[in-house]
Amino acid sequence: MVLGARATQVEYALLLGVAFAVPVALAVAGRSPLLLAPLAALPLAAPLLRTVRYFDEPRRLNPVLKGTARLALVHGLLFAAGLAAGGTG
Image (cartoon, rainbow, N blue to C red; front, side, top):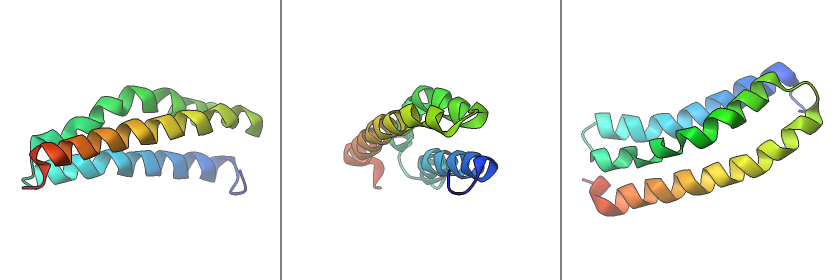
């Protein structure tokens, strides 16, 4: 919240967007479609993004920290699984 409400919302949305755009970009660039596995984590991202977008006081963002950690874990595991299952070539 040091950035202010609007900048916080924009930054959070951009960071989530990049996290989900990278696997798509790799798949489009000819890598394995298995790299799209992290997209299965999108349902975890939607409520977090909604909370950040419409929060009315900074304390309402505290649960988003826990949810973001869970999202990062699931996204990372799915991305790693996609890479391990042949997403490197």
